Image (cartoon, rainbow, N blue to C red; front, side):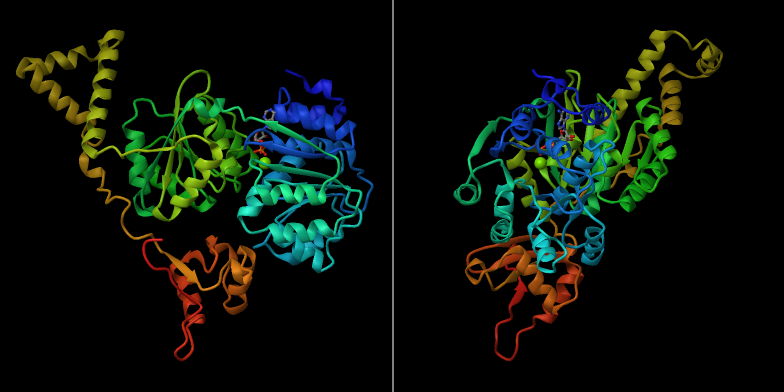
Amino acid sequence: MKNFNDLNLSDNVLQALHKKGFEAPSPVQELVIPLLMNTDHDIIGQAQTGTGKTAAFGIPLIEQLSETSRYVSALVMTPTRELAIQVAEEIHSLKGWKKLRVLPVYGGQSIVQQQNHLKKGIHIVVGTPGRLLDLIRRKSLNLDRITHCILDEADEMLNMGFLEDVETILREMPENRRMLLFSATMPQDIRRIADTFMKDSQTIRVRGCETTVAQTDQIYFEVSNADKFEAMCRIIDIEPEFYGLIFCRTKVDVDTITGRMVDRGYDVDGLHGDLSQMQREKIMDKFKRRHINILVATDVAARGLDVQDLTHVINYAIPNDPEAYIHRIGRTGRAGKEGTAVTFVTPAESQKLKFIQRKVKTKIREDKLPKIREVIRAKKLRILKEVEELIASGSFDAYTGMAQKLLESYSPEQALAALFMHAYQHELDRSQYSEIRGGQEKIDGQTRLFIARGRKDGMTPKKLINFIMKNVSVNPAEIQDISIQEDFSFMTAPFKVAEKILRAFRGGRGKRPMVTKAKGKK
Ligand code: ADP
Ligand code: MG
């Protein structure tokens, strides 16, 4: 294995890598960094998720771009806004003291704000094709001085219906820019893009190393949002020594869940971006020393947390993309011990789970939630074991007097049973658990919508959102799971938003409305 020192990198980048805790280059990095730094080839990289592609192109960008330039020099296209943010953050964290500015741009965020940032001078723009094109059309993003163009997760951009936008952007690029294309798979359309827009390209292929994932037992439970909390309590309570991280989507969720767990008597704390650095460090420290055995966090807040040997990672909210999934569950099962990664999936999220499973290329198996009776039984066994350990330790002399006193009047069985009740009555009380109705009930608060336009009408996810927004004022972030088919499309929206959309598209006299509720389950 090579060392970063062998790759001819500046002290600045080497220091940044050290700070990030990267010890050695990943196989993709070993191949791509020298190609980018020492040759003129365009690069096609076929590699799975989690193989370190961002740093593979990010490091050469940092080394090669000039901080004195007032123009955008590098453009990275990603399929989703989460990826745009992640890529921008990863590059940012590698740039050391070099004054390069990186900006993520994506739909759903104020375009004016992005335009203002661009005016101030940005070196690397990372964005989704739709928003990039928008900024180009508004003349806020000038491609004339681009020296590097990177297509990240090209196959996903294709799946999301961004192909046309990508091609339009590529056509507007200067002739002599360097181009990189990363993709886990190489469908025909991606090949064609490579053939059309790349010159003298080198292809590299790398198999992902699945070591972190292989050590982890990956299971999922189908539960409704309403049942998640109860399900989580059972999973924790049935474990003899739970030591785990619970991932939520938002800060508010972190606070709510932490609060409910505290009420239920868990040793838990929550971590999110609103806490001061000092507070965060204090909480992380408590968790590392195991003064608390449960930490609830958002992805962002958990980023700086290097804990090992977690018994569990619980995805209370399913992660948005496969990267986040790998990143989250990579924290379990280190040092030869097997960990468990639990993912809660609501009925509406089953497609998302399939997508993650496909990308991560491991089986996430469905499991049944423990029954209340099983949880109580596990707790009883644990209590007995603890008492036995205490007896073995022999350090209870201070209490023998009390024991003798009881045994003067009662049988040992009576005395012990009363004592157990005194100590564990609450902990063994079934009524603190509530029934779980199972995941079959209606999708909580969401409606699947049918749109009578499809690919053959030129529909793309981006166009679909624009089309809806032209007619109704809705927050585009609330429209999810868009699926474009040949003759029609689907999307999911929260119940209230869906009602609003349906109202706006109510058909005219005798006309079939353009948007209707989807028939059947989904
Ligand atoms: P990909 O784009 O191939 O899916 P990423 O670039 O997102 O992968 O990297 C996945 C994770 O691995 C990130 O958390 C990143 O910080 C980390 N990583 C990347 N390169 C290294 C390395 N050389 N050593 C340790 N961790 C790394
Ligand atoms: Mg990536």
